[in-house]
Length: 277
Image (cartoon, rainbow, N blue to C red; front, side, top):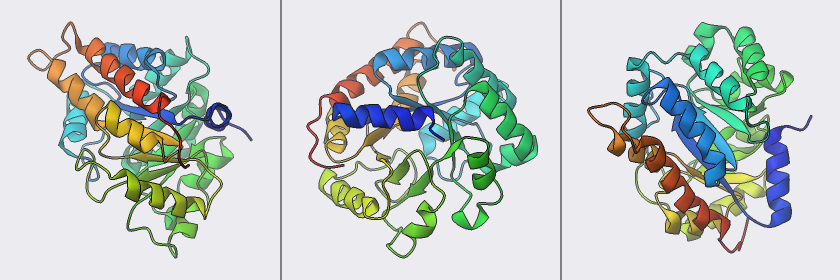
């Protein structure tokens, strides 16, 4: 079965360019502003949108995304409201792939079967659940695949050639390569090392490889886009949102701040000369 994610990467491959994958936190800083941002991202150049599912213990996230999740939770964001956000987005956009990213606990509490049913009906295309290893594929990964959702897995610099086949076994849509060790929003990736790592992952899979962690601007995005199939930008967008807030609430420039930065990064990604990937 082919998904919106599969279609989008096939189209971009034919065009000879990398995808821009943007991450924003659902409900940050409030539901209405969050929806306005998500709706504006495709026009800014986002090819795939990752939407964070707020969680109170986000162990793999750096300070910017942790703070975004807490702002969303304080504003009353729930997993049910996150699915409603996707459903509202789908009222005006049936093409842009949506990937929900987060942790297993909220899904477990919601109920796996009910969550997958509701996610599919809301127009979700894929999931990234960072705390479920391949050994737990029966929990969510395999049921998600049966429900028609891609299950995107993370590979890291410490995922060696012995571990990669297990990581990739039930992965679909794309592989998310974490370009540096550490939490989100930390040091900048080195394009030469990333290019070699992408090539290594591709020896084990035909899936597109998207690279994230540490991409902050047009220049760093262009460098990664030259060696990968996709560039994931999250912390920089979340930080732009935070800087626009007025006393912790959405300001007059909040949507524009995120969209403007996304547009500049998109220019870097879409204008990059591909040397790999």
